[in-house]
Length: 219
Image 1 (cartoon, helix red, strand yellow):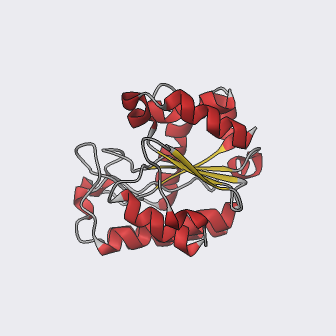
Image 2 (cartoon, rainbow, N blue to C red; image 1 turned 90 degrees about the horizontal axis):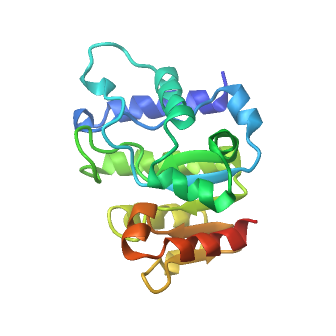
């Protein structure tokens, strides 16, 4: 069993112990399928906000395993990552198609789970915050990405967790954050780029500017 699968099992156990887990979507667990891990071409860790309303196994009486969730989210990555702003943004930056995206991206989120029934940030307990931070740190350590792109914005609850993550990895970005006048902040030493969620970028008309700046760092 791979270290990633073992860690995903432990994360699911911790998630199941969260008091309000029936209010949450199922946790996003990265596939430990060997063909995916070995096939990564550009190790770019792409960090969103949270998954919303997906794979709500928490309301089922059936036993759901880490393997089940890995497969479900990997299937979504392969089959559903097309027209959402989150994925179009990434594909447009690198000028890649869906198949190339799968080989490029290590997809995770700021919070390992979102709301079960609607969009937006879930109720943040200490337990959810802690396991989300634990997962971000493990993913970075396990995959050793060449770049990290954070598209979770500078507002809470994402800001609080992002700053904790940046402190743990000793990033210079703990002293700054994206603003509308400076929507992309960069840690050149650790190759970290932090900006707003693509949907928000579109709303305030900064998407093309941000994409151009990120391209200059990646390509």
